[in-house]
Amino acid sequence: MNIKSQIIGSLFVAMVVTGCANKINYSKPNKDFDVDAELAYCAKQSESAIKLIPNEGNIPRSIATNTQKWNYVDYKDWTSGFWPGELWYLYEFTGDRKWEESADKFTQYLMPLSINPAVDHDLGFQVFNSYGNGYRLTRNPEYKEVILKTADTLATLFNPKVGTILSWPRAVPNMEWPQHNTIMDNMINLELLFWASKNGSNKALYDMAVSHATVTMQNHFRPDYTSYHVVVYDKKTGKKIKATTHQGYSDSSMWARGQAWAIYGYTMVYRETKDLKFLDFAQKVSRVYLDRLPQDLIPYWDFDDPAIPNTPKDASAAAVVASALLELSTYTSDPVLKKEYFDKAENMLKELSENYQSKDKNSACLLHSTGHKPAGSEIDYSIIYADYYYVEALLRYKKLLQGESLLSYKND
Image (cartoon, rainbow, N blue to C red; front, side, top):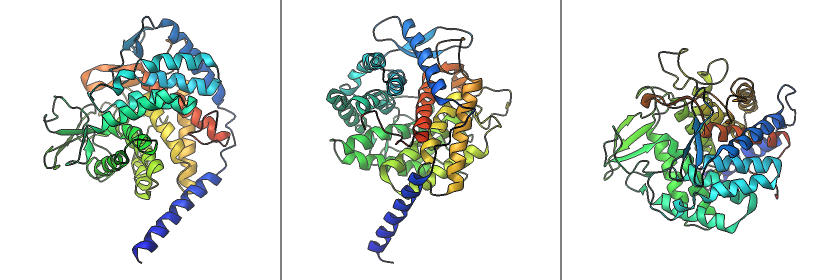
């Protein structure tokens, strides 16, 4: 088969995959799961949280167990984009301008990230979740300008010798600084580069994102498709020095949220590239995660912690994966996998809604997330990124039931 025929064949397969996915009927709601009620609950909780935020510049991050007091951060914290992003999602759900006004207020706090040098890789989490969702819903040109500038800033961390974006441009324990480290979380930040490359920025950003995803796919995974949290490379030669962990139980364990980032990240990379190797990989990293889940579908913070079941769960990983699986279900052409992904995501959301909601305990949406257990940080907390992905997943679920595009907005 010549190259032209191969290209045509690949395009045909991609069209078939997309076409089959779009013809699947998601319109049969689960009578035991009222998504509008759960989104309304999140709006109620967030309305309560807004009343508690004390000063200009404070952004909610987490709440300790058995307390109601938020821990706040400023725009420099890696979690700073989740709260304004959650508010944008609530504006999308309700159409109420009060949510747009609140979302804009907290989004604007993050503007300095677009003009300051990059201090780490988390600019996608920070700016695309806030300004990105804001632009999707409002088409405010000022938001677009911030997104494009921030993407250019993130691109300064790309090392062409390695082929990935540097995660922490500073000394972090066990990272062999000043060598080049890349963490699995960084997969999520690629969406910022993809979007910018297609909306007015340098086309080279697209190539950087594809390179990062490809190199990570080659070096960050074991033969069973479980992921390492971190890979350290020689910054001059690009040679892999070691694979290790920073937040997981051990170098050889499957840290739940790290695997969640992989599932979400490679699903997104397939969406942006339509390259079937990324769809195949998203399905492989999902398979090992799904096969090892406990019965309630909410993972322990690390799948290999020997203390299981007497160790914390991580609702944030469950929320990330639920959102990713809903999107992945629209891409696979295998009807069995499609149904499994959708059903598992639905049941994850149902479990989170029934047994993990904060309700009268505090003003977050969810309880029982684990931030950085090896460091003793935010263990069994309510954490803002769990809430963000929970609301995102609920919205995606609602859109599928209504036959809408997952990335649609009210003016589409």
